[in-house]
Length: 163
Image (cartoon, rainbow, N blue to C red; front, side, top):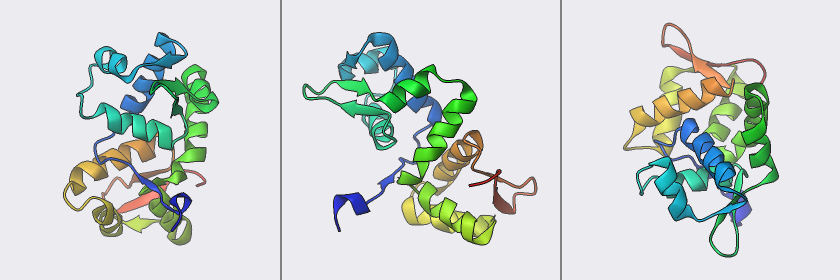
């Protein structure tokens, strides 16, 4: 398989607000930022920051430049400057490059809804050790981006609007 056939898997504990906070921090510090300065500004655990940078990079929001600094891409700049509706729309356009969103979205397109057990089965394939935390993370991302959410009776995952 070529590297383009591999999907990036979202870390089970990577929160959307961490990614958006990273973009805000880069924007506030200038065009190109040393990652060590980001850790200080964000107050992130030092072991989590590389994962958040990887998520942002996989979403094509940041890029690592020659000297190892991190820079916002054009899309990242649009996200930082955009209204929340625009942010959601832009992130929905690139989220299907990330697993398990790609799998969940494909299953929802095919089935129109998933039983929670099916949803957990998908999550378990990607996160065998941290399934519950991953489920919470994915539901938060899915709801914020207007992709999917859990039914009020906790039995189904269904799309929000058109996916």
